[in-house]
Image 1 (cartoon, helix red, strand yellow):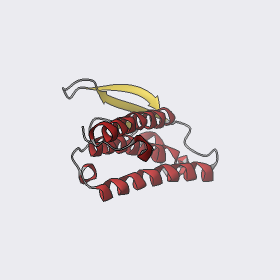
Image 2 (cartoon, rainbow, N blue to C red; image 1 turned 90 degrees about the horizontal axis):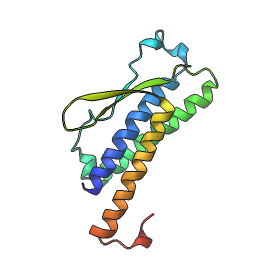
Image 3 (cartoon, rainbow, N blue to C red; image 1 turned 120 degrees about the horizontal axis):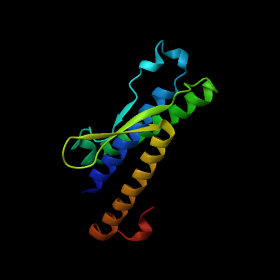
Image 4 (cartoon, rainbow, N blue to C red; image 1 turned 30 degrees about the vertical axis):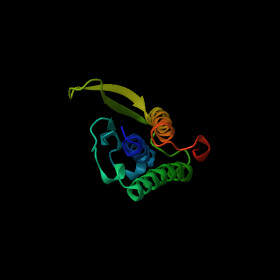
Length: 143
């Protein structure tokens, strides 16, 4: 995979978890039927090959959008104090092989944010290896 593919893949997962966090952080009174919210996260049903894989400006903009989503989630939660929806459970769906079968796992918003952050760290480590070994960038030039 290319550097751009690793970055896009990381942002896909972070964006899915962050969007769900915002959805589940809104005060319960903001939705007349909070129990009917779709709280499914389908990690493998995503668009691949976008411009954020090949164009640096697009990738940087995507990173900024995901960062803003996470900041908004924290602001909403802080502003609403303890009035956030009590039910922060979600259903995470994963494909474990090349066929389209998804496996469902019960989870929470917090666990999925943690998973997405951990997953992104793993992929950024892969980017660092590519930068050093393939692109021959010196280690001191990398974070």
